[in-house]
Amino acid sequence: MSVTLAEHVRAVAGAEATELDVVLTRIAGAGRLIARELARAALVGQLGMTGDTNVQGEPVKKLDLWSNQVIVDALAATGLVCTMVSEEMAEPLHLADRCATARYVVCFDPVDGSSNLDVNGVVGTIFGIRRRTAGAEHVAVDAIQPGGAQIAAGYIMYGPATVLVLTLGKDVDAFTLGAPDGEFLRSHAGLRMPPHGHTYSANDANATHWVPGVREFLDHLRSGGTGRTYTARYAGSLVGDFHRTLIEGGIFLYPAETTSAGKLRLQYEAAPVAFLAERAGGRATTGREAVTAIRPTSYHQRVALIVGSPDEVTLAEAFIAARR
Image 1 (tube, rainbow, N blue to C red):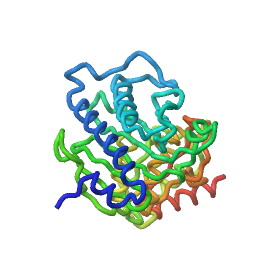
Image 2: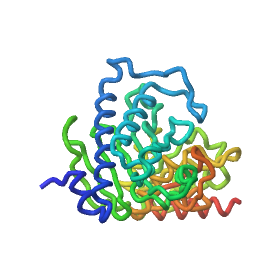
Image 3: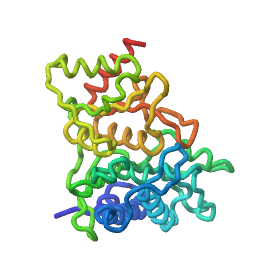
Image 4: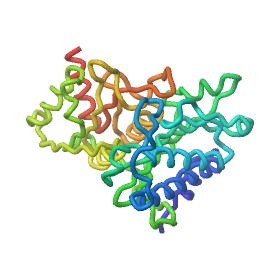
């Protein structure tokens, strides 16, 4: 008998099951709306740019803005979310009238991989849930909690099927949308990342800018140095590339460059993915430290991300350390 997302949350989330069920059900509902809009975006004028730029200085696509509002509305309707942090909002959204009883902070990227939108490529929604803290300055504190403080994290991948991957802090499970207006049903229980794999995901066009050790590591994989044959797979979507790595093993790299500490946003991209990877038996690092251990200094802090099977991630760290 198929297990719904709501049934799963109520069974495994413990004392907070009722509240987390509400929040996650609303996130899943937002995902259904986004999946439906993606399917018809080219027909209703939702592709292309708005003409604005976000806080990172990047052009905003119409679907970025629309999807952000869908998720904001969904989370606000729960009455359980005090603060939201999003790629598309310069400052955290604080729902002051909810905070007396609302216990959660949600960080999210409404459309990860949005450069794929106009070519019908894989995109996703990434989210991480933390508990709110107490005190007068709780908003500033809550918005920069480390990834290890997450109590739940996941993503919704909009591909051939719409799949929600979730951890509530222990196991990682996947739920597939059965119909456009249907339920997310558990399709993969207790996902475990293989100890090693046969694929790597990296944007080789940036190779000349990477910190020392990364190119040498990939050359080692390509040359058969591990005793295994590797294939390159890169979709340009963190969700799409990580999902393959989660299922099949291997490694995803968006490493630091000689002129920057990294490009992915910590709070709503790297930290949720790292939390998932660790709960599935994998590892996530910047090349120097565990991603979930980083204490953010800003809402939109960028970091390097090397995530995947423990054998490959440990080897990548060794190559980087050897060239420092």
